[in-house]
Amino acid sequence: MKRPGAGGGFTLIEIIVTIVLAGMVAAMIISLSGTALTRGPDPVVMVQDEADAEKVMEAIISDYVKAINGAGYATALASIYSTNHGPNVTKTYITSLGGSSTVLQVRVQGAGHAMTVLLTDKRTSSADPKASY
Image (tube, rainbow, N blue to C red; front, side, top):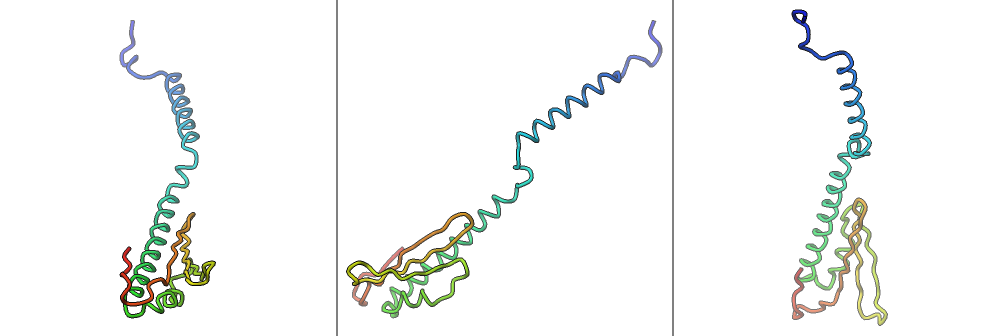
C-alpha cells in the first residue's frame, strides 16, 4: 500500500548524486576554459592598441605624402623627423651605401608588434612624378 502524499519527489540520495555530478561538470568546464574567463578583456585591449598604432602610422604617411608632393618636398623628411608623433614612435635617418640618398626609417610600436616604414627624399624637383600611397 502506498501512503498518501508519498512517492512524488526525489530521494535524498538522488539529490546528492545530482549535486556531485553538477560540481564535477562545472570543475571540468572551468579547467578546460583555462584563463579565458579571467583574461577576457586582454585581447580587446591589444586590438585597440594595435589600431591606435596603425592610426599614428597612417597620420605619418599622410603628412609625408603632403610634404613630398607639395612645395616643401625638399624638406619633407626633416619635417616628418621634427614632428612629435607620440612616445611610441622612433625615427632614424639611414644613409645608403653610395651616400646619394637619405632614408628616414619610422617605427611605430604597438602592443605586441611594431610597424616600420621607410620614407625617401628621392623626389627632388617639382617635375618629378608625385608619390601616392
